[in-house]
Image (tube, rainbow, N blue to C red; front, side):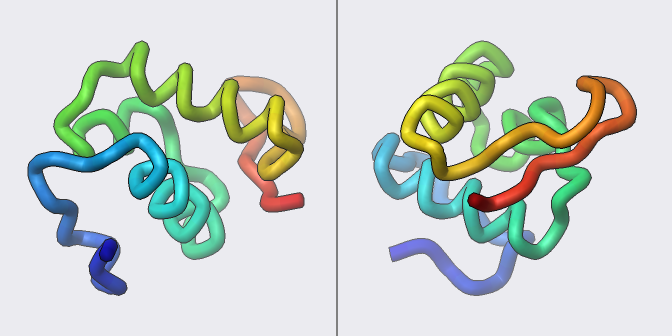
Length: 75
């Protein structure tokens, strides 16, 4: 189960756990970037972008504003 401390991330994550933790992180910091997340989770930037896409397709998160100046919002 993911730790409540957002600075601690286990080395190996199942995708489902990572998606849930991404939601928790977005709740705490809506300005989080894919770069910050791939470093935190130890996965590729492409993996995080696929995670964002999955969360958007499932209507869990939306991007508000531009990719550079916008932020993530939990639906």
